[in-house]
Length: 349
Image (cartoon, rainbow, N blue to C red; front, side, top):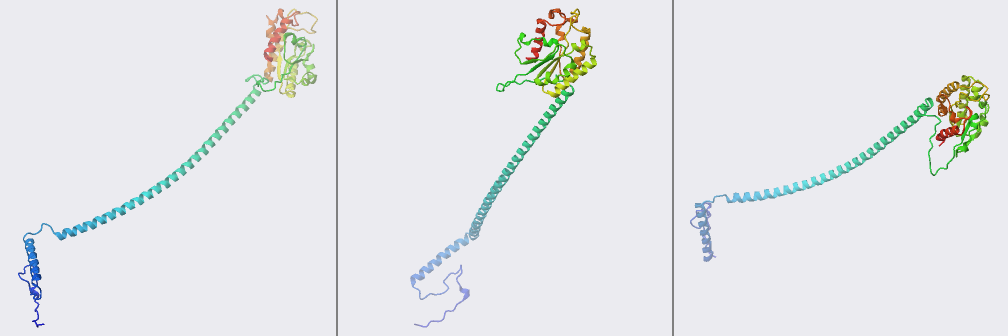
C-alpha cells in the first residue's frame, strides 16, 4: 500500500450552502458513487437556491410546533373536559344522593307531621266531645233544678214521658182513685174503662181521715197515678181553709216521699145546685165557699208542682151545678159522670 501524504483538515473549508466544489477528494470511491454523490449535492444546491430566492410565507417549524402545541393543548383540554365531566357526574350523583336523603328526610318529616296532625285532631275531637257532654250535663242539671224550683215552667213535676217499644214488655199503669161520695159512686166499667184502676173512696172522706189511713188507702196499692178528690166533706164539717190546705199539702208530701214515682193529680171540688135537697149536708154548702176552696187547691197544686184537674168548670153553669148533670142538685147523674169519665180518660189515655 503506497504511502500517501497526510490529509490536511481545514475547518474553514467545510461544506456550506454556497460551496462550489467538494471540499475533499475521495480517491478510493468508485466513479459511480462519486457521480451519485455529486448529483445529490447538486440537487440539494438547486433546492437551496430555489428556497433562498423564494422564501416561504409561514414559518414551517413554527407552525409545526404550534400544531403540536395545539394538539397537546387540545388533548389537555379534552382531558380537562373529561375531568370536568367526571366531576359533574360525581356532583350529580352527590346531588341525587342529597336529594334522595332530603326527600327521605322530607318524607319522614311529613310522616311525623301527619302523625302530629292526627294526634292534634283526636285531642281536639276529645276536648270538643268532652265540652259537649259537659254542656249537656249542665243543661240537664239546670233543667232538673228549675223543674224542682219552678215546676210550672216545664209543666207538672209528676208528668211522665211514656216511650213505646214494640219489643218491650208492656206493664200497665195502676190508677188509684181516692175521694168522697162523688168518686165512690163513679162506676168506671159502666163507661167502658179498660185500664187497670182501684177505687178506695168513702162517702165522708176528709183530709184528716185520709192522713190517718195513708198506708191502707194509698201505699199498699203502689199506684203509678193517684187521683185525689177531697174537699166537700171538709166544708160540711167546717174545717178551716188553713187547716184544710195544710192537711192536703201533708197528704201530697207523704205520697211523694213513699211513692216518688207516682203521678199525683188533684181534682177540684164539684159544684152544687143552689136548691139542692136539704138534709144531706150537715153544714151550709155554697158555691161561693166551693169557689174559694178550689182557688186554694189550685194554688197548692202549683206550689207542690202537681197537676190540677178542673172538673168544676165542666159541670157548672151560671155559677152552679148544671141541672142536666144531676138528679138532686148534689149527686151526678149518668151524663155528669160521662163528662167526668171523658176528662179522666183524656189524661189516662
